[in-house]
Image: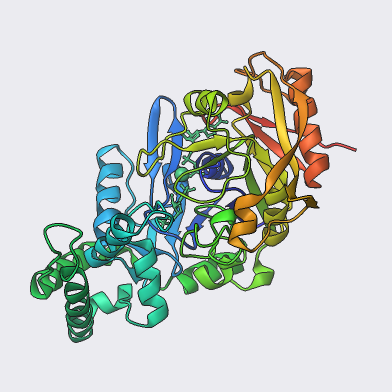
Length: 432
Ligand code: GDP
Ligand code: IMO
Ligand code: MG
């Protein structure tokens, strides 16, 4: 398999960073195709923790080339800070990080708009975004008022775009009470700053479509790294409580310029329970003690914002929806170890809406908010999975849980992660 796409099949934070890092052995390229610095992908190597926001999680493997595709919205300040931080920690990206010249740029006014919408929005309208300017940057892309990486090098174009955008945002943001003091950006200062940032980024900027196509033609192995998760997809997620990009595997085609037939395999990353950070419906949420237990054991705090993640049971209805949309060939089950102490493991197998049983994710917001999960209970294993290297050595109930999920979801689980480190992965052998 030369081109594999790895996507989260829940609300993000499934452990994609760890899985990408694990799968990067023997791979030549890792590419991001959507999202921005809202992502926080954690990779633990030995005792060191790395949290990647814009740079693909394959970067920790020497020699691997990493691509930030045109579908990503790039905050140059955040990207340069990430490059510096990696450099300080001994990871050099020179010559192996490529940033698409067609990617849209995130500016401070995008972040200000994002924060304004969050702090100024009435109760029930707040989305709980990461405030990284993602929504406003994608909105500018769709409005055709965005600035692309290539435009940073064209002074008259950049100047005209910034003058228009800054004037508009100053008027809008300045007229509102929040954020205080009223927002005001100086277009000349912004122009000079971004000209400087553009120079610092110049060595990385490339026609990534040509580079990735050439790599595929040479038969090199490429991993496509999804950010967020399918239930945060702008079309198929729990709208409006979603991110502003398509997160499904199909977004590779528009976000990287690879045609549909180029994708050989889709790998879904599935956490053994559910989490979500930010607002929005979460039918299987456990706000009480069990949720707190999972948060504490699983370290469920946002890798980008530090916010506590909401925790609950695995929701097979929404995961089945995701598997279909992504065309998942194989699943990686992560964080199984977090359930080690749980007495009874619950899985939501269907929803109840009023007196109806529902097997799909409803589109209407009020229906989604009203669904009640139907659970199947399985015995917990109450034993440690720490150090387990072979599927056969997992506690019997843990194996039953994995088998149950495979049957329920109709998808093979090829890898099982039982800890944060690179080596804490069980590779499941072939089955009948
Ligand atoms: P991502 O956004 O999908 O890459 O996931 P995050 O990095 O935001 O969150 C996943 C968290 O779980 C990180 O802190 C990982 O180090 C951690 N993690 C990943 N896999 C496992 C696992 O199998 N067990 C445990 N206990 N932690 C894990
Ligand atoms: P990774 O790649 C989890 C959530 C935010 C909010 C909603 C919209 O680490 O899995 P945005 O800033 O994108 O406009 O916020 O989406 N969100 C994530 N949740 N993991 C992420 O990324 C997320 N990126 C955005 O919390 O609910
Ligand atoms: Mg994350």
